[in-house]
Image 1 (tube, rainbow, N blue to C red):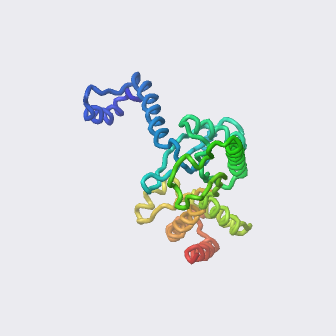
Image 2 (image 1 turned 180 degrees about the vertical axis):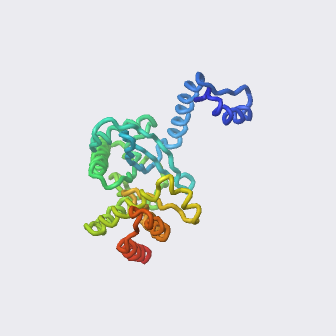
Image 3 (image 1 turned 90 degrees about the horizontal axis):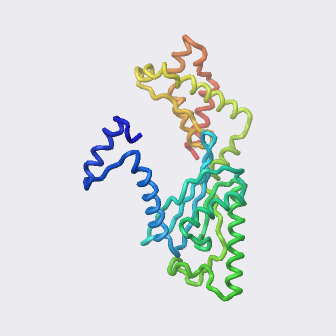
Length: 281
């Protein structure tokens, strides 16, 4: 990629501005990327050393690949700082024990002791809850072992984190993601056959309205094309319905020549009622 003429037009001004005989090509990039990665890991490791941290863990799946994302949060100078520790591809079944092993492997790269972890935020998946419980049990076992041998427990990692100096955090706190909890609650509240059919009809109409041949027609009537929702994001479904309602007149004009674009009164009625309820909430 670095040798493509088009990319060079973008890259060369940056390289020239850096100066000092700096260059980037297809050969030295093989060394620059690993060297930079090692430097970043070292800097983060130094920052997190003996600090109390909170983790955020999530898994994203796209195009048959699953990626485990791990973020660390900590307070520095009264402010919350966020560090991305890794984006690791998962190649096995997403069980709680497998996730725990992958997370511990990533923490080891940064020399992070599991006793530094105050809390972990995850979604409501059973495997994530299992992972937090497994890691929590491991931490508790280590704390008990250290206490029995008269070693300091994990309270010694960082002083002055809590206002109450008698506060002990020898138990890992698992936090369920509020956004995901809200998503599940809304999904349960609208789980009925009529509404699901209505959403399916609305989604089908949006797909028809988004074909390339209609793009210019939307511009001609100064109307935004409706967006297609992501079923796992309730707010995107809400936005899809809202934009679809704004396309009612445009869709009706298309239906005069093609019934595939027919905007049924039932959809309008349901749209208005559901949107008004959502806005009231």
